[in-house]
Amino acid sequence: MKKSYGDHVAVSGLNLSIQQGEIFGLLGPNGAGKTTTILMLLGLTEPTSGSARVCGLDPTRQPLQIKRRVGYMPDDVGFYEDRTALDNLIFTAQLNQIPLQEARMLAEQLLERVGLAEVAAKKVGAFSRGMRQRLGIADVLIKRPTVIILDEPTLGIDPEGVRELLQLIHNLSRKEGLTVLLSSHHLHQVQQICDRVGLFVRGELIAYGDVPSLAKQLDQEGLITVELEATGFSDAALNELSSLEDVVEIRGNVQQGTDSTTVILLGKRDMTTEAAGIVIRCGAQLQSIRRKQYGLDEIYHRYFEGGGLA
Image 1: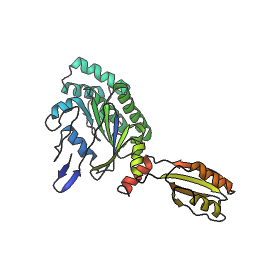
Image 2: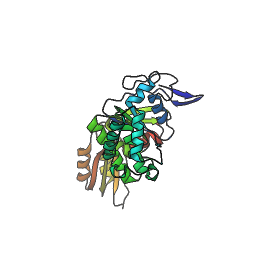
Image 3: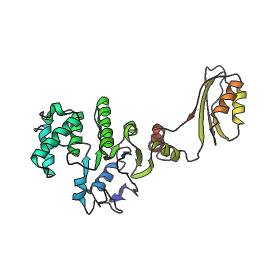
């Protein structure tokens, strides 16, 4: 899919598939095109070119059917401030043609599930941001959707509230088989609960997959990194490490009189055991050695701060 506003391309060449029952995180900085993508999936804006299928339906031609099956929570959820949490949920249920008695029962069950049962009779105008977000999830679920889309659901919530909200989303997906699309610019939050992550930068989905597959895409040369730290490191040890078969590059300088030296080996295979043996044999005291794996931190900074792969 592609979406343009005049000369500005908001989303370019999006090609993405999300599996039933998974939690997919759309990760990217503000202005990357995440919300525009969500609006196209909901049929709230039409793509300039291309098409989408949500639950087998075309959002452009079947927007009402999409809305019956998909629950959407924007980054700023709107409620009737002078009505109670229970009243707001019942109102949403009736808008979705759920009979009053059933609507009340569903609303009470959902308030219990999201941890708001004790404030069901409290007016929403007095709710904190975290409470409003919990109510927003209940509001999304009351029409029994098969897919829920959450746009920056943790924005403005304190750390403990974020943890509880993410746990709630994870439990809902696992226990009820809900498919969840979560948009965020907070990498750690996405990493905590998402099965797969899509990296969105300047309107383009530049990579997606689980963290190991993203790391593989990141390391285009296929080199393995071994990082070691030792005291009493000698030039002899550095020279012997450099002469190891399949070493492509070695980083680190031996400085006399320093307490500790860190050396990084880049090679075509895992040389952790051999490197440790060389350091010890040359009289140094090995403090740590590890084969470095790319985590979401490195992936995030490489793509977002560097603007893509080098």
